Amino acid sequence: MKPTIKRCDSKISDALLNSDIHPLLQRVYANRNIKQPDELNYHLDQLLGFNAFKGMTEAADVIADAIINGKAIMIIGDYDADGATSTALMIKALRMFGHENVSYLVPNRFEYGYGLTPQIVDVALAYKPSLIITVDNGISSIDGVKHAKEHGIQVVVTDHHLAAKQLPDADAIVNPNQAGCAFPSKCIAGVGVAFYTMLAVRANLRESKRFESNSIPNMACLLDLVSLGTVADVVALDKNNRILVEHGLQRIRDGRCSSGISALLSVANRNQISCTSMDLAFYVAPRLNAAGRLEDMSQGIECLISEDHQQTDSIASQLHSLNTKRRDIEKGMLDDAFELLEKRLDFNDDDLPAGLCIYDSSWHQGVIGLLASRIKEKVYRPVIAFADGVDDEIKGSARSIPGLHIRDVLDAIATENPELIQKFGGHAMAAGLSIARENYDAFSEKFIAEVERHLDAGDLEKTILSDGSVSIEEMSLDAAEVLQFGGPWGQHFQEPIFDDRFEIVNWKIIGENHLKLQLRLTAQDPSVQTKNSVIDAIAFNKDESALPRNSGLIRASYRMSVNEFRNNKTLQLIIDCIEPA
Image 1 (cartoon, rainbow, N blue to C red):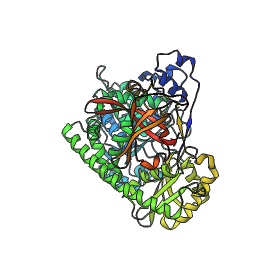
Image 2: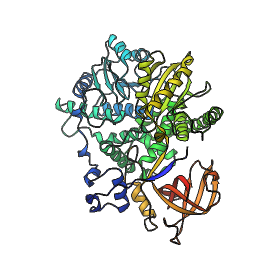
Image 3: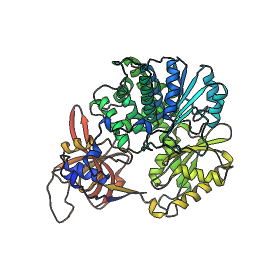
Image 4: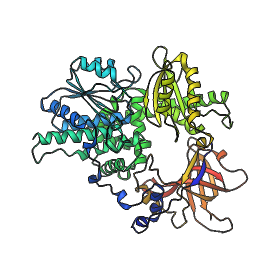
């Protein structure tokens, strides 16, 4: 499904126009509904307070009591980057508070599945915890919490996933998405919830005179973890999340981050001094996630916890190798998926269903989420990819498009057909579920029907919203650097994208099917002749078929980027979409 380029042309407010913000950024910010420069004030004193969280007082009381009385605390995390950073943050914070009697468990996704299950509680019993704290999970762990309580273990749930009508009977629940919670930032990541919980615990301990007046722990030193987990979980970057991410990035750039994040940037060949949210999203997070996808996320957590540079370098190298293996597995699965779809469907057929389910018994359970994302990008439809689980169960990973809340779709199917879905959970754009293998065809039909209730043909046309044209005077390395650090960019605060007409001066295929181009910017009005310098560009995962056959002119949407090679910086355009001019 080839996208269409459309321009977003919001009016720039007088406050932005009269500010000292770069003119390109003024336009970009206006297109992201920024009206006042104060909305870009990312000082830490602008952070929302923790008192608005429902259940925070109770959670802080329980955790502080465990610290003061030296009780054994166990963290139960999730096996993705948000879960890993949440787990590492909790452990580091508790140690900063002087509590060493802390351990953690991350359920192996292939053996135990997601969350605080009764089986994981049984494993935890060997450690004899007095308190279990869940991070990035737990809101749906009704049986697991009950099992822990039956063994005399207190449970505090910290989570951000959408809550069902029935909640676990925990000693405290901290989740902005539970009914009655007044915390305004509903899109905060699991690691953000963990950070706020530890802020509240610190305040509780300070009131209890636990700290000397000159030795109150500085929680800002954990913001590198918050930044990584927030970006990795692709949550919306509202102002509160942007504050958290920006300060984490500043610590990373200044070399004040965890040794593990530095090591992961290094193996990915990224420059730590100029690290951006895009570096975290596309280079650090995939390497961290590779552990949870293929083996055990404990490797990733140890990388984030340890301050032994030799150890973190070694683990980062292992994670890099795992990520390479993950990419090879993903490529094979993607080839299989496209072959499977081409047998069933014509990608150019107007009758392509509004939603797709795909399944192959040979696919790797840890990679189906990425597979669903790739297929979604190809066909621009909600996609659920399934792989074999245990016994006769298959597990699905769902990815959606704007306009369709995928968890609500699963909830509607489960309500009307209780026999079809064994369990499910997730967000608006991503979810997971388990079904019986024998129910796959029936579920697929129900999924397509439910999606078609919510989406029409217009919703299934992919559109790239552009920030407009860039003049030859604006097209510079300096402007690219201004844009690079104008964020942090991410979900719902997208990296600036522009569109223009170009003359193709030269092109070639490099690497694994990437299109390397030399372009000359032309006037938007074809009657106006310009003589401009040649600009380097690259279009990833595109070949010569993306270029027009009978013309050397194209219209392209692109991002202005800084290309660093051997300490030399140059302007490079990253091409997202190519249309005939």
